[in-house]
Amino acid sequence: MKVSVALTVYNKAPFLNEVLESIFAQSLGDYEIVAVDDKSTDESLQVLRSIRDPRLRIIALPENLGHPGATQTAFEQSRGEYIIRCDADDRSRPDRFAKQVAFMDAHPEIGMSGGALQLFGDSEDVWSSPLDNDACQAQALFRNPVPDCASIIRRSMLLEHDVGFRSAWPRVSADWLFMLDVAKVSRFGNIPDIILDYRRGEQNISALSRSMEARRKVIHLGLQRLGLEGSPEQVEAHLTTIGTIQAKTPEQVRAVHAWLETLERVNMTLGRSSAEAFRKMKAVFWRRLFFTVEAADRKALWAYIKLSGGLPRDLAQYLLKVRTSSLLGRQ
Image (cartoon, rainbow, N blue to C red; front, side, top):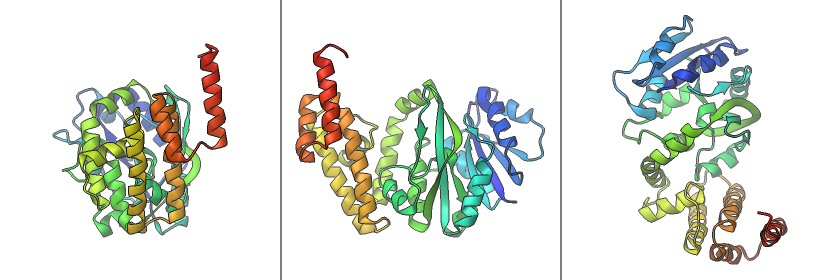
């Protein structure tokens, strides 16, 4: 069998038929669906059981394990050469499986890859990821190099290196830990094509607010995987760097600047990405910080400008335009 679809389900009854229809409509036909219901408290399991298709295997967990436990169960029950991850509220494009399998077949050195996401619901943005392993490995020091919900994984890589989700991990936001473990033993890649419609809405915002304690634990464990202490100060600096926490003070700006230097040294030690790839990734996160501090606090903005050695022309022009509009009362 070519593909096992690892579909983890927890209280997604309103979306399940739509999600499964997008899977059944795939142009690639050689697949099974391993649907793991994580002890849902809504009608999710009943919806799954109402679908009559021999490609669908349903595993009803006797207790709620959270995302790591449910995903690992799907991995262990999969029989395909590749495992394609699906969340229970996103829609796969009709040629998603065919494109991802073709990419992996053409690149046997890659253990995990993904593609671009088209957001729908509260946003219509497109989210893209780095394409080559060098850039992906650089991004892995900050956050996921591959979108988990749009990923394809070589099952032989998981088995050979005993890579997977662990039951001791926090129940949410643990994808980064999994990808850091993949980064040690394999290569990444992403295709530029949009392969998934990613649902955005109130559920994303509320889930983020509920999961901050778990996210801090994940960052702590991830930093330890990178050879760092994972102290509370390092965790906060990392969360501010990736934008989970907004930088509003000069002290936070300086902490981000110092943290980027720390991660650059980590990258040199690990040697998983080139110095040039990391410098480009570092510049991306530092630039994003500008738009947070510009709207937050003049002292924080001044600290950013000083640490940057001045602003590049486009950011200076943007700042002038915003300040002029504010003075003229157009904001």
